[in-house]
Length: 426
Image (cartoon, rainbow, N blue to C red; front, side, top):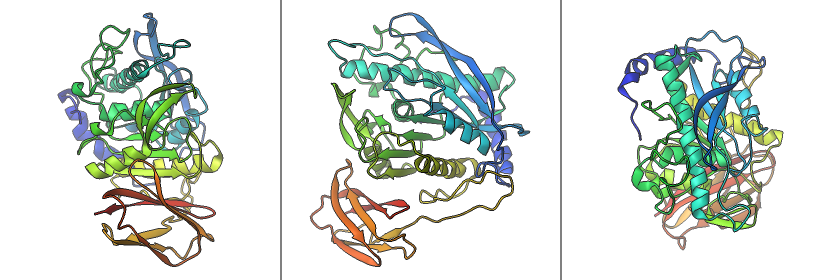
């Protein structure tokens, strides 16, 4: 993990007490600022050379809680999807997330980043072209983080950001940016097959040259929605915590580890999807939560999935901002009022024991399940190894003796909810 620069030391010593004081109420847990957020659009945070070699100005939109009087607030930067070819900071994949975060009490910033990929339309992009496109986005994401730290240090902290609580979220291609920002953090990890010198806008090593040099691009944790990482070998103990969301039937970005294909036409390179990233995080001891969209494709957009995503994000961020226990299994609702009662639905459908195990595991169902349940067990690269449909109640024993040693994920879903736990085969 990268270290915060000494210039931020005074803020780092001072800010956490403010955030924790705000946690005394329902801030960060319910929509305590239900009015439409205060939106400031098209703020320039940097610039760099585009794919064509032209200088491109980089802008972001800021969403602030309406009526907020706090002196410092946590920040979540959000990057849109679009396969690094299309998409916008005002897209429908990111604006609802930014609005929801601001209503919870966060400042949210939707960023644009450089788009485009060599090789299109002919002869088609290859692994170098695709990875270079990702690196441009990563450089821009890092510059956006540095913009807020620079503004806090020298610009009067216009947006009242608690620079010790900066997070980065991304959807699809934006999820790629978030994951690479967190785990591709050493020069030796930059793939040797890409040109970081001759290609436009790729100089500057890990940090890049998109603006605001001299400030840290470190984030406290990341939110990955249907993204992927170039190589989970980059993930090490002590790296940034994460929460991931991914559909098991995603045909755009692999759920596990596989070759990603652009538009169904151009095979690009092998990547590690959210399932593999989560498994590596568990192995490395990195705090991680993983919400599986069972049977869903790429970035489900219907209301139930968005609501679940925001509840999980809310609870995940609350752990870091308010020092609450990390609870990946919480599934309740976010109340759109100050002081309203919280509906808490503990969605822990089942338990696993013994864990670890070399012979058998027992899956014990919660008596409050909504009818019959389905059980699916995945290995560390997202392959289904056990499947049981329509289990009604009680418990069931599974023989895992013949499974290879490693980390496995068990998904249980009933008519209304789903829950995921991990076990280790010794």
